[in-house]
Amino acid sequence: MRRICPSEDGESIRYAIVAGPYAGATGEARCEWQEISEGMYAISWQEADGATVVHVDDFVRGRSMAFFTAADKTFYRMQGPLTALADPSAS
Image 1 (cartoon, rainbow, N blue to C red):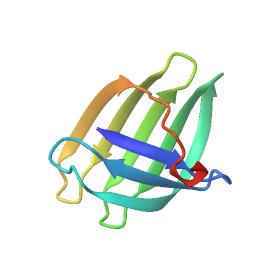
Image 2: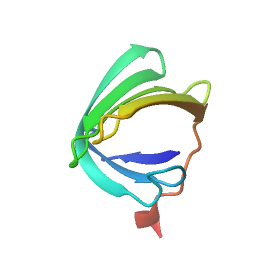
Image 3: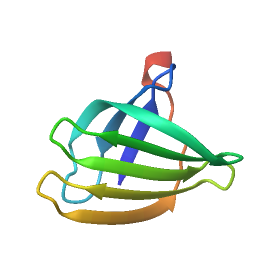
């Protein structure tokens, strides 16, 4: 499971992996957003270790699908609910 937080300009993303074999990994990467339909976006980025990530996030229905290739070339497919997180800098 990943938690992602886009930057205000939408050009980078902070992520934290909170479950699974890569739990504890965090980072920031440049990203690209492409609107697929109203409220649904494809978001892609490459992490510092070479891992590649594509999310298809439906902000209207609150669902996410993620596809990523880890640095060791293992391919993963995941899906689940989108959950709004509190902005830690707002405290």
